[in-house]
Image (cartoon, rainbow, N blue to C red):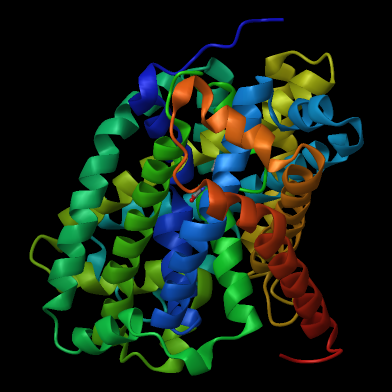
Length: 451
Ligand code: TRP
C-alpha cells in the first residue's frame, strides 16, 4: 500500500480541514437560512447542535479515517463488510453538491466583475439580481467559468498553490467581514436586525427549523459525506484529535456567525426587514450586500475585494469537492486522473445546467415551491446527509462501538474530555433525534401530518 502523505503538524491539519469546511456554506448559505428561519431561533439551535452533535460526528469521522488510513468507501468496508454501502452512499453527496455549488460560485465571480467595473449603484437596485439569475446565457457562462477554474486546478494538480493563496486570503476575509458587519450596524434600522438575529423565540421552533439547522451543520462542516474521514486519514497519529476538532468547529462557526451579522441587520436597514426580504433564500447575500457597498465610501473597491475573497473561499471548497469525486472514480475504476477529471467535469456540467436555469427558462420546474437548485440542496442536505449521519451513528455506536473511536482519539495518551457526551450522543441522542426528524420531515413533505 502506498504510504499516505501527512499534513505538516496540527496547524497544517486544522487549516486544511478548515479550508475545505469554510466556503459558501458559511458566507452564502448560513445567513439566508438564519434570516428565513427566525434569526435567533435558528442561531441557538445551530449552536447547540454544533457543540453536541456536530462535534461528536466530526470526532467519529476523523477518528475512523485516521484509524483505517482510508477514505470513506474503503474505511467503512474495512471495519465491517456490511457497511461498505455507507461509504458509497456518502460518496453520492459531493456528486450532488458540486454542480450547484459551482452555480453559486459563478454568481460570486459575476458580482466580482460588477464591482470591479464600478456598477455598484446598478447592482444595488431591487431587481438587479433577479434579472441576472433569470437569464439564460449569462448565468450559464459564469457557472462554466467557475467550474473551469476548479477543473484547471484539479487537472494540473496545483491545489497546494491555491491553498497557499487562500491561507493569506482567509484571515483577510474574516477581518473584512467584521468591518462590513460593524459598518452595517451603524446604519439606521440595523439594530432591529441585530435583535432578530440574536434573540431566540421559542415559539418559532419547529421540526423544519431543526432540520434546516442540522442540514446546515452538516453542509458547513463537510460532515456526513465521508469528507472528514478522508481528512482524518491524512492526519498524523500523534496529533491531538479532540482539540483539532474543536478548533475547526470554532473557526467554521465564527465565520458563519460573522457572515450572518454582516447580512441580517443589513436586510433590516436596507430592505425594511419585512418577511419577503428575509425569505429571499439563495439570493439574499447578492441582493443585500450591494446595497451596503453602495451606501459606503469606496464601496466599489470594498465590494471587489470582498467578492474576490469569497471566490477563493468557494474555490478551495469546490476543489476539495471535485477532488473527492475524482479520487472516488480513480479508486473504483482504472481510469487515469485526467480521464476521471474529464468525466466528472462533463457530468457536473450537465447536472449543473438545470440548477443554473431553474430561476429563468426552467422556472416551471418546482417542487413545494423550490427551484431546481433548492431541490438539489434539499435532497443532499435534508435527506441524504441525515440518513448518512444516522447510519454513521449506528455504525459507531453498535458495530465498531464507541470504544474504537475513544481509543483512536486517546492514542499516545491524548486527552478526550468530552468522552461521556460523545458516547451518549453517538449511541442514543443523535440516532433517536435523527429518526424523529427524518420521519416528521417525510410526513410533512407528504402531507400526512404537520408539526
Ligand atoms: N463545507 C463547505 C462550505 O461550507 C461545502 C462543502 C460541503 C464541502 N461538502 C463539502 C466542501 C465537501 C468540500 C468538500 O462551503
